[in-house]
Length: 224
Image (cartoon, rainbow, N blue to C red; front, side):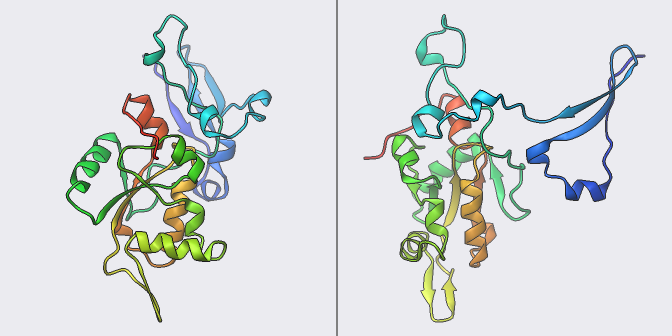
């Protein structure tokens, strides 16, 4: 019986050394004619895509499907930007999908200790965001580069500064997101929070972000 088989040709040592996000992976397989084949699986980025401007309107607007489809039925997405994120940020940070995001938003209505956090910079947030999200730009969680904004940001998240460091007694439960699985802004936010001791069990990650949210037809808002 003919069958297709996929197998990795990399050793565990090589797995640790290669940046799969950038160069992909080589694989062997047997095709439907029982012939052995090999393929390199990596993202394809045409040269003319590399000059596309990185901006909210360009990345989050436009048409994806045929012209005959009504405009209100269309969504678009960019296929070449950033690096693809793994499904788990860490073993202690839970990854959310859309159903879990909706449940979080519902619970947060009556719980001021739960915050939906848009980690993108202000221009992206003002362009459109998920309803009920607050904006804590990832750059402001960089204590060394933005000391004043950093203090304002962690205060918003319920963290107090003490003479010995930080007090996380009243740290809020956060659900962070950014533009999509290719976007590194919410991962950077979590990395910086964890670096100062923020409890990882109070961090949740919506990996799909705005792009997945829009692809499923959920609404966004333009903050005032």
